[in-house]
Image 1 (cartoon, helix red, strand yellow):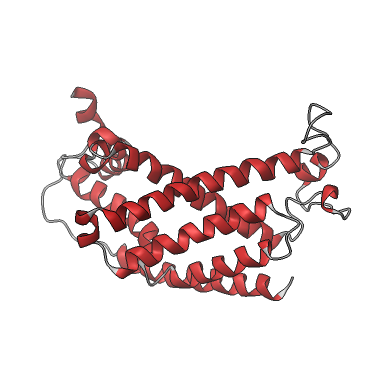
Image 2 (tube, rainbow, N blue to C red):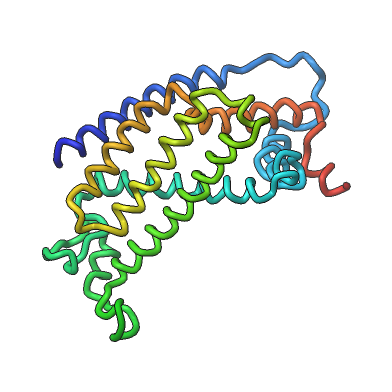
Amino acid sequence: MSFYHWLLLASIIFCFIACLCWFLKLIKPVKDYAEPAGTVKDGVLYSSTVAMLPNHKESAYLHFPTYIAGIIFHIGILTAIVLVILQMIFPHFMHSAALGKNYESEIGLLNIAHEMKTIGNGGVFAGWTYVEWLRLVFGIGLLISACCGLGMLVKRFTNSELKQLSNPDDFISSSLVTLFLIASACAMLFPLCAFSKPFVFVVATIMFCYMPFGKLRHFIYFFSARYQLGAFFGRRGTWSMKKQKNN
């Protein structure tokens, strides 16, 4: 592995340890003296499913396009993180002979795909393997996700109410993640570019190092908050799947 591979690995380890400390701090149990009127399990299930639907969230159904853009944005982030980690572990991941060398993927399924041609023998895509098609699909998908992130960032800058509620960390975190998505898309779409892969690794390293200290650590708060809210209101019988069915 090259220097930037080790740099990314170190940042991931650092991020994992720091975020684990945050998570352990967040999940400290709080004693509830009220008599139970429901179950924790039912409340957590409701909190993690029905309560997340747009019609149950005022901020979602009043700003539905932004809600959809946010979902696409977060799916893209998760996809990009998985892809960059796989590229770190398997240096030849998503490569093919079309890149100029007889690469063999460490992933068995993709290794077979290298020898399989796509349907159709004419046009720009003649002779493409499934690996090339996967790169194209991932690249376009990540670009769409980056556009969603960029759109929400512009909205944060231009909307007076959002701008008043925002702090510098909001802009830094959003910009950093959007840049990571753009870099990941470039690594998928332009594999022959000598700088595409090092660029995405460097951006990912900066993102993982910043994650425990900024807004990006909300991915930890999301799961802990969903559990704590569900446990609290579920035990008191306020949130439950049974009530939802009756309504």
